[in-house]
Length: 188
Image 1 (cartoon, rainbow, N blue to C red):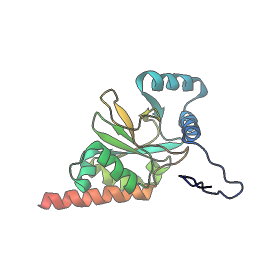
Image 2: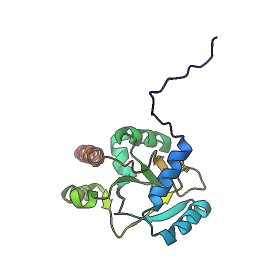
Image 3: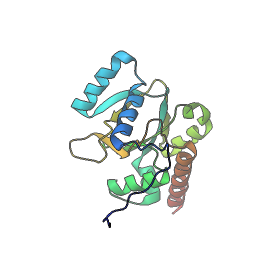
């Protein structure tokens, strides 16, 4: 009997989690940054405004990357092309795009502001900044994965699973490459 598609055999004990299950788990994980009584409000913000303000520095922090830093490496690109570049450069680590900048926020482990303090000081020359405790980040709903006229922010690189973050070294390499290119462009 022939079939137009093949099915792959999985080893015993391997579980497949549909994207909807992973998205729900990631949503719960993101909301766990808030006190329990604030989670319902954040869900309402996601539903009505598309963005919820979440505190940084407990489960994750963020590195703010201005568009000029990214385009120093890529040249002028459209948003979907920048999204693809960031997904590749950061190995699929989650990135939020704030269309008001546009600015990008690479989500990194909560410890980055503390452990990468010296590098973060140097990154400010490129207008990159490490955001941690005492900072709120507008985090879009998890299904907001492309720019639209009605959105203020979206997931440039979606969060595929709870706890999945950008590797700090990948973010550092991206910033260093951009700084190097910006320095070369300044020399001319």
